Length: 110
Image (cartoon, rainbow, N blue to C red; front, side):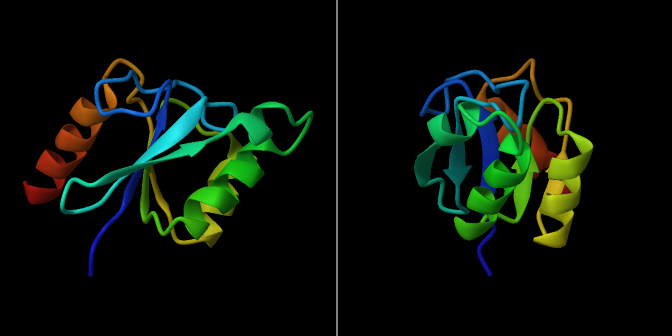
């Protein structure tokens, strides 16, 4: 089964920085096992007064992601992600999207 990794991102490419925020991230780069990427714009969630993290969690789960790499994920969003079966790895905000994915995959192979 292929694993899709979602990364909160400041832009649509692997060379963009990981967005330290989850619910109000600019968007999410989703990377599959073959290295193919797709970009989910998060503009709709950014504009929400409340529930941005829960809405972003729903969209990531719908996209088929099984792992989220981000900076910080709030408790409500973390609960929504856990309920959807999406594993969360925090503390990736100092990396690019590509670096975060590589670091995650290296840790999985260890």
